[in-house]
Amino acid sequence: MEHDSADDRGETASVASDRPVRTGASVRLEKLDKRFNRVVAVDGVSLEIEPGEFITLLGPSGSGKTTTLMMIAGFETPTAREIYIDGSPIVATPPHRRNIGMVFQNYALFPHMTVAENIAFPLKQRKISKASIAERVAGVLDIVSLPGYQRRYPRQLSGGQQQRIALARAIVFNPRVLLMDEPLGALDKQLRENLQLEIRRLHEELGITFIYVTHDQEEALVMSDRIAVMNQGRIEQVGSPIDLYDRPNSRFVAGFIGESNFLEGTALDGGAGVNAVRVGDDIISAVGRNDVTSGMAVVLAVRPEKLSFADNRTSESPASLNRLSATVREGMFIGEVRRYVLETAPGLRLTLKQPLRHSIRHYAPGERVELEWHIEDTRIVSIGTD
Ligand code: ATP
Image (tube, rainbow, N blue to C red; front, top):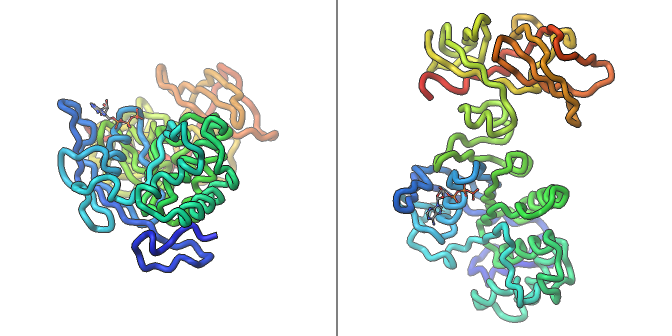
């Protein structure tokens, strides 16, 4: 069933096709600042979001994610600069004129209204005809996989179902942008994982621009086309999940997305290609950077799953590998992998994650081992006084 109407949207696009209609808007944040008295919540945030993109603002508590979302929605006014939707400035436009849907963590359904009344609410505000409302409510309930739930009250629904209804209410008026602030935060792990996939599917189906807020890196990696990592009111890095994972450009991103070992050292040379770095008594090679020069203090990052025990590998060319001797301090089974803590020098500990395979031998605390890993998996994430 068609859940949209060109008339109701005041647009001329034909929507009576089986194929999803790409109706997402572009969103551009231009040097946004938001201060609350002395607190700088958002500090010069610029971001270009493509029409129909699924972008996630990811960061720890207090990093400015919600404030950024609230400014896009229109519930907060930036202290400085502008937000553009499809190229038009919108800071002066009130929230209900922005054609933006929003879902919060705590569902925010009206408890005294039925599901149908809850979903109809934004349509009534927009003076849509009664007949069209009933049709659209039914259509959107199909989309969120709760057909026939019109007469239930929120208290008769599970948390996951309530959040689906909140989603239905946020998309029923055909917004071109959907904002979601930790929408799965209150749900248990299993349900959260199911709904993550469902929200992704919904994004594919609707073709609108999704801007999603979470502090959960796994959720961001699973769901997003791109992730903007926020820290202390600023965007640290923007990229695809794989970009951020494989090529973090700061210590913060390397530590916040996935797990990283950090090695502090001194660069022996600089420039693109490969940089040699002295770490204690050892020389480690890293992916080179143009902004690194000889003598500079640097921090290297290596993911625990990129490290391996030398005798478990065969066909690698030694020239492409780093090697370090270490002593095993701990080895622990933690589910999908065995996790080792290794000491490479007094006080310098690295974590290694070893996949569980029958052919792989385990190491006991106290054993001396050789570690190796690819130079390409060794990144300089901080230089000088960063
Ligand atoms: P969380 O994940 O905990 O929701 P967040 O990344 O969404 O965090 P914000 O809620 O945007 O962060 O808050 C950013 C900073 O702005 C915090 O230091 C917060 O205390 C402050 N802040 C947010 N709203 C207000 C307000 N209305 N008045 C004063 N300070 C505020």
